Length: 136
Image (cartoon, rainbow, N blue to C red; front, side, top):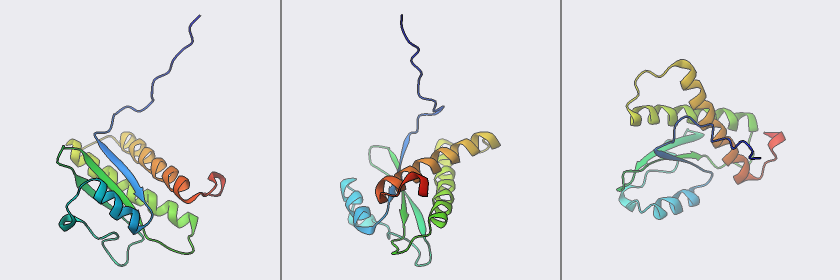
């Protein structure tokens, strides 16, 4: 007797990539790996006052990438980090919406999209920093 094989629950396969970067060295290494010409490299944090920022890149092959960058800090308030990651998830969603030509998604679709992006960024943060899940 065969068992049920469930498919991935994602409704849309993303035509873009989203990555989290937690330090400037990793950011520069990724830009180099992506073969972005050095003259086109954005500043890691963009603004001196931001705790995070999102950079949106389009490669020659047509793929699109969002790199969310966190400011390096010695002491990190986990609640603030979560808030910042959710904030940047909204910016990523806004970019994706424009990229897809979607001008008026339903409120529920938009909420699920932001939730999915935010969860991915939070999971990446937990994996990169070694923070236990129950502490975040």
